[in-house]
Length: 366
Image (cartoon, one colour):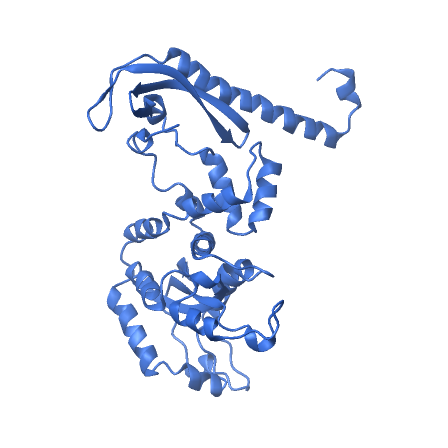
């Protein structure tokens, strides 16, 4: 740091220089570790899952894209005629078979839940040493959301009994989909409709283009006794409530566009209490016994405020961007990532399942 050129640079230039050179130094450190491991790797007797011995050994190399840049990974490949190589050291070190490292996958999953795919590509290329394209971002997002149900089940199993009230609320929000991913009824209606103008849609032709996403929220809250006048305010002065409203705890958000309304509600209630609760709510809704329409007509407040926020954040803010049209697989993945972000368990999802043994990584590798 005593170089004359460094003494003349500004603070911002010095910071940028340290970031670039520091990243390259860290990349070389990561690159050196697998090279040293390959040098000390000892030859062993390897038998594959079918009981066939791998007698032929040769040195091989793969390239891993990390947050610090591309890193070559040398290792021994155990082969036999007509079979692809097996790499025991990858299984021992829990190296995954994907091209991108775990760090890049986590970065993509965190950004894909709140930004467009193009913005994620720019962010990854700008803030890391990895290069990625839009198609790869879409695929990594789908892979990151695979353990959505398992993460919620794990969280539900870790909760104990409580005297607090358990509140469940659900609602739907439409997402513009590709024609082949619409539900059967919506697809038939869209096929029957005729367009007046080929280049654009007129106001009456914008129907039958959406698939409903079901959003559900579950949270616990202490009992809060109130008077009728505290609940229904008819414009006259109301005395302030003597006790403070309790804050909700253990908030969870579900969102799915793939499952129908019944299955989505049952998934939420299965992780909350028992499946009979969801069935009971659905039957009341079909019978018109919830009284939402009457409450709206009379100007009475109804308990939808806790769900309007998740519907806006989880669905509308990300899925309803101008010109966006979604496939079912991509939409479901983004919904799950935004739901776990709203539930504040995104890091838990990205770390689930825990580091496994070498069984998963003992798959065929190029």
